[in-house]
Image 1 (cartoon, one colour):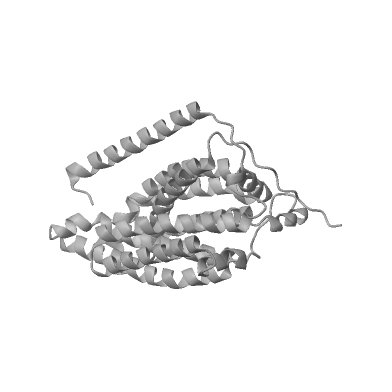
Image 2 (cartoon, helix red, strand yellow):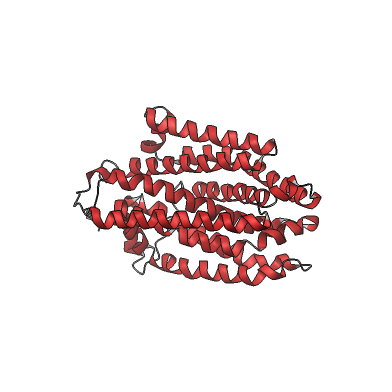
Length: 349
């Protein structure tokens, strides 16, 4: 009989799972938006040639901050996911330990290199400075896709017996590269929208250069979103039938969530084509939240029937939970206030 890794049992949670699920979705959507802006903005700054280098310079000044915010916003969803799916997430991280532990060093190195490049992007030929951090961010995204797909594919865990040093990669998963491509194209779309939003107010005041940069950002956003609608279908049809069929009519809830999310994406595209980055951003935020919900439904479908977060035992600890939620709300409120104060005097977009 071939060796096999057992699936660890889930731990008791301090409150019903239905309380943690929406918190996971909302915080992960926020993390994903900023992460896409950081990676997509880096790619656009690197790929924008000639006359568009001014746009690259304006983006470059914000990229280190975007990476730092991405890291900080990644903590809450990781905590909530650990509560609900810890036995799968931690096992996937251990099986791919070399890549997983390297992830943090890779992101730190990318941040440092972006910080170094930031004041130098206006110089001729400075685009080459963005090559190393962009490659590192792409590598980090592959590591995350590897861990994410391993966490929902327990059947692949037995591959550890040939990679006992923690070097297991999930590259043979049919969804691996379609999932990564879907994320990559999304980052270009959000990065383009980020560029447009940065210059929106100055463009509205009649600044011709800002107007050109806003149009460039919207061009990236609309073209990437069009590709996104197509590669989303590719990703959908590479999913195992147990999950795919749910979104093709087998489950009214799953199908409705997917259709609504895609519709919000089309609405965002329409606003981008109309030259309205602010409205496009609102639809993009709603789209990302919808697609994060789709992602969660896929995870639950692939882990069923062996596991459901609803099956986790509850050991009530409402005091610490209330303190955590109050702190989370307070930090969120202070962050919004800081951003408003930061934008007000300079008229930033």
